[in-house]
Length: 92
Image (tube, rainbow, N blue to C red):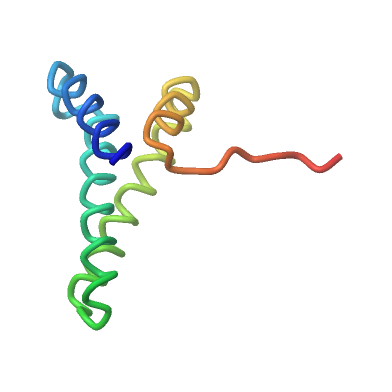
């Protein structure tokens, strides 16, 4: 329930932004990934959906790589907002 309210807050914010921006595209891919993941929990043998999920994951990964090269601050902000990746901890 918390994820849904969090996503709705981001979606309201994203509607104000440019729909062609990298952040908005990553946000849309993340929503699609979450929907497909919940679908695949019920339908484990839906191989076409699995393929679609892998394609979307690849697209999002490329966009995240592009954003991290271009603007590291916006990248880290987006990662924390969407809860996509775990923060890296150094073992020293």
